[in-house]
Structure formats: structure tokens, C-alpha cells
Length: 389
Image 1 (cartoon, helix red, strand yellow):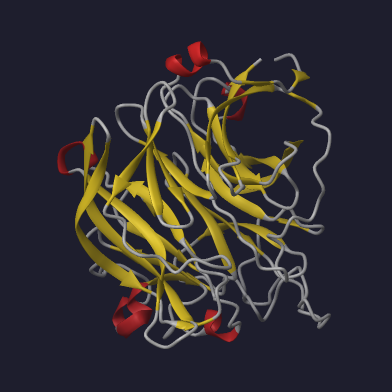
Image 2 (cartoon, rainbow, N blue to C red):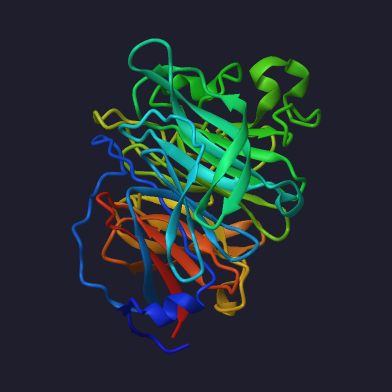
């Protein structure tokens, strides 16, 4: 494939040919990696052409519908559907969200049998009854599309984090696995130690049945309670999960001051935070690095300086055949698109392409194109479609 200068094109004729777009999410914690660390830089030669399809207000996540249209969440509590041709319309019935800091409307994914049941799953920050508290919530609802947008109905809450103080580190990324179970990332809300406590859902990867009940083959099921829902623990701020074609679960998370990670998620494993990390606390206190034999699962890839990872996909399309099976991550402070070279259950750093903007979300389109959502408010968060040069 030849390498040419990234071009940003917006053409009405081109938009009409596109099947759909993608969405993202913005975090604002000044003490976290997810702040705008790198200033906008000149875009270098990239092996793809980027075409602007639409713009959104603080987009956070996206998912494609079977008909090629795209669902996009906006952090303030808005769900949009992007039609073929690039017109964004509003979906009503979204629950109230706790907006602020890293909180707000989060992820959206389809039930594996969406074509027959019309169910979508959403995550969002929800206010607590005590002032200043909130927690991530996951719900499912019936999506009905109309010529003017659509609506959510029969909303059913399936899972909640405890309501704690603060407005950061919710996580709440969603995925359905090959087993048709619902997987939820639950970040540690900057509370540190609960990530090591199996009786707390904070700092965990959670696994549920599609109706919110608990699978009996979860690794800690026999312990009951919260522990029964846990698949892995010792995580910090998990902002991406995705399955590869072999059924392996990959996850990326923001480390503390340094130490962003890509992990292969295994049942019952402890990933170490805050006992170990390849980064340190923001106040300068040292955290011991991962080392062989320490009893914790070490990351497959890590960064210091950080990239501030956003969305995550495992690429399986035909447009970029040389990247099949690789991971793609949006870089926030690094303002980049990051590729991780995957070989079975091993991974290493691949390319890092500068994009000149914070990249909140990554998705694969029906035709194998790679879609990006830029992190931006005031309707400046661009949806880009990357196609081969």
C-alpha cells in the first residue's frame, strides 16, 4: 500500500455512498492521562485517507446497525442515529445522566440477536441520592427507528456501580462475547484499593447474562454476591474491550502517571492495580513495577509516556488485509490512532499515526473501513471514515 498525505474531504456525493459513521467520548480530569497532553500537530503521511462524515457534540461511543446506519452517543445524554447520506437524527427515551468530569452518556452496543429482538444496551453515569455521588449504570431497551429518528422504550436497568463521590473513572465499556454474555468494564472511580476487593465491583471486568443475571461459570461464582459477577480484577480505568476471532478478550486501560496498558483478559486473574503498575501515582509516590513471579498478570503492551487510550477494536475487515487480527486504539492526549500487532495471545507495539486531534472512539465499518470519533464539544467532534489509499 502506498503512503500519502492524510486528506480530510467532505463531499455530499461521497457521504451518500457511505454506509454509516462512528462515535467517541471526552474525559476532563486534569489529574489523569486523558487530558489534552499534546498540542495539535501537523498530520504526517498516513496509509489511509480520512473523510469527514459528520460532527457531534462530545461524542463518546458508536455502533453500526445491520442496515448500515450508525448509533452515536453524546456525553450530555443524547443518542443519535446517522442515516445513509450523513444526516444525524435524535433517538428519544434516553435516561437522565450525571454529566460532568468523565461522567455522562457512555457506550451503546447491540444484542447479538438485535435483528429479531431490537434490543440495545447502553451505559451511563447516574446520580446518587447523596449530593456529589454517582455511579455507572448499564441498561437495555427496545430501539424503534422512525423516519425522523427513533425512540428507546421498556428501559430495564441490569447493573449498577455503587454511588460514590467524584466524577471520574467510570469505565462502563460494553461488549458481547462469542458466548453471548454481556461484558462490562467497571473502573475504580479513583478509589484505588477497591480494585483489589472482590466484594466491590470497582476496578473489575464484569460478566453477566444478557438479562443481567449471573453466569454460573464465572470464576468466583461460588462466593456469591458481587464476587460472583467478577471475571478479572485489579484494573484502573478501563476504556476499551473487544474479542478477537479466536474468542480472546483484549482490554486497554489508562494507567496512573504513566503505564497505559493493553491486557489479555483471563478468568480470575489479578491485574495488579494499585499494588503494581508500570506507572506511578500523580503525587510522585512510587508504585512497584510488574515483575515476573509477583502473582499479578502483566500487560502485553504498555506505554510511558502515555497515549491516553480511548476506544478499542480488533480489526477483521478486508479493506486493510495486512492488519487483520490487530488492535486499533484511539489516542486522546497523544492525538493519534494506535495499532497493536497481535500474534495469537502475544502483542507488541505497531504503528502510531498522528491525527491532529484527540481520538475518543474507534469502530470498524461494514465495508472494512475504520471509523474514528474525535473528542470535541460545541459540535466539533468529527466523525471520520478511514479508507485505503
